[in-house]
Every structure is written in structure tokens, then in C-alpha cells.
Length: 108
Image (cartoon, rainbow, N blue to C red; front, top):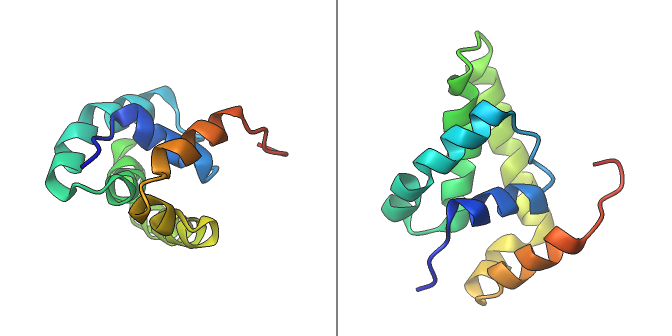
């Protein structure tokens, strides 16, 4: 089984164009990655949980519940649209993430 790092998790968000995190959120994502990834052993699920279930509560916003639900739907929709689950199953996720680092997204 291939091991994924917090950097890979952040690259997943970049690939999905969900990488508009502030410094505090990036730090929390990075610090919590190993624990979440080790528990689920799935980089997409770890990134989803951190992005939609942990980070919205990091800023102590009164809208955290709404943000969490919205981010979760957005994450799932983008993973489906990009077919990342299939890419993960075939073992090509790291290669796809490398490509996304070189790719220029319009309006990003």
C-alpha cells in the first residue's frame, strides 16, 4: 500500500481546486493528516474529512455546520467529476497529483 503524506492531501485539494486555505487551516490540515490518514488508510477520505469536517470548525465560526455540509457536498461532487476514486484504485493518484502541480487552472 502506498503511503500518502499531508503534502499529497493538500495536492488532492489543489487538484480539485479546493485549496483556498488560510495559513491556520493549512497548518491544522498538515498536523492532523497522519492521524486521520492512518485511521482510514484512504487519502481521498482523509482529505475529505479534514477539508469538510475539521477545518470549518477551526475558525470557530457560527456558520461551521453549514460550511461543513457545503464543503462535503462540494468535495464529493468534484471527486466524482474528476473520477479520482477510479484513479486511486488503479494506483495512479500520485501521478495525477504530479500533473496537477504543473497544470494551470483558469480563474484559480
